[in-house]
Image 1: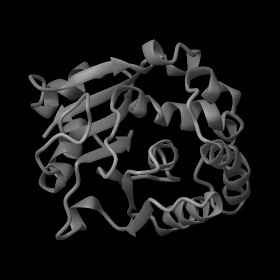
Image 2: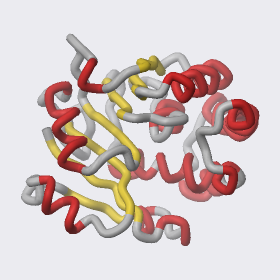
Image 3: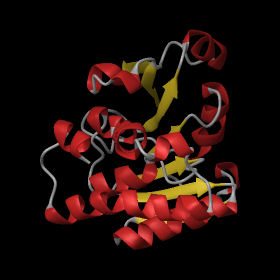
Length: 210
């Protein structure tokens, strides 16, 4: 957990306790339902939690904002962001039921009150809209945008950025951005520039405005 405190300082006691519980909860549930690779579970705070918080480093969600995490898997980036932003409402969505079970157990184990989950796909969500969508390595950018565009409402619930998609991507993004048709509006930040750790080379935060 020290690596989190290396970059962030203003946590409440409750937030510190919640972040501290994540390792035990994920190790326990990963033994039952494998949602994190064996090699990554030992680097949970760096490769999953700190990586998720790269979104918080570039986009400070306003209190009361509503955020949907698409293809959350074991709860990333949604769970760390929900701890970081206790007054923001998060809906974590995944089509795989056993992953949602892990998310529910981790949210309950940390006492998170601002997390809801849906077992399904984001395009199946009816009658709800959100200020932001977040995701991590779920689908090509163009496909991701097609899914979330209908559920993101216009506005600005962050001091830094208008409502939109904020996602974590890796590798050579040039071709993916070109093929998405979003090249003129996409913004990108190097995670390695935000958190200069070797694990984050060729990792990026991508933003597309609604």
